[in-house]
Image 1 (spheres, rainbow, N blue to C red):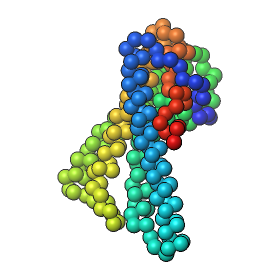
Image 2 (image 1 turned 135 degrees about the vertical axis):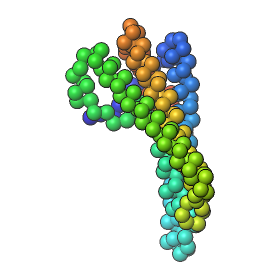
Image 3 (image 1 turned 60 degrees about the horizontal axis):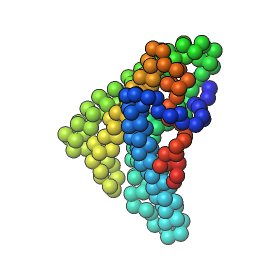
Image 4 (image 1 turned 90 degrees about the vertical axis):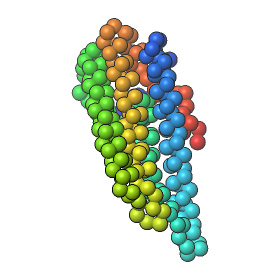
Amino acid sequence: MSFGSEAPEAAPPPGLLGKYAVVVSRLCRFAYGLAAALVLMDMVLIGGAVVFRYFFSAGFLGADEIVALSLTAIVMLAAPEVLRRNQHIIVDVVVALLPPRAKIWTQMWAAVSVMAVAALLIINGSNTVAFSHMIGSLTDGHLEWPVWMLQSFLPLGGVLLGLVALEQIWRAAAALCGGHASQTLKQGKPNPQSPADTL
């Protein structure tokens, strides 16, 4: 088991795939930066709630609710960039023993699986958002936010995951069709830094 590759980011492949990769990279890095900002916001809210509780014997109204409700947004916004960078957990004990061409097929299969999950998030998430909007569902607690606004991050995250998965499928197909596998299959890694890395 490993946590993906830590190699520097390779230059985008030539042609239409390279242009598509650049667009996906920018979208995912922007979403990743928003997720990082939400994490910092949650840290401030939790720290402020602790200070208010222990030094002023007063609660920080809505802090716990905001933190709990932001978790879905954080996960859905950050997951596509983590996938694009190939920094997710990878069970590669068997895959590492496969020949290069078989490894490409396993990468394509993994990307197709991600595409299926993304489709479920888009379809089921959109249906959930529509239903919550129709019945006017609100969150519990003091804030009473519309639930559909929070659930909208599910299809949004699905769209971004689908874009990354499509890029991975495209890269694998290009490698199988005669492209230079080591160059074609390389994609987002930590460099250049995303907005979240500079926070």
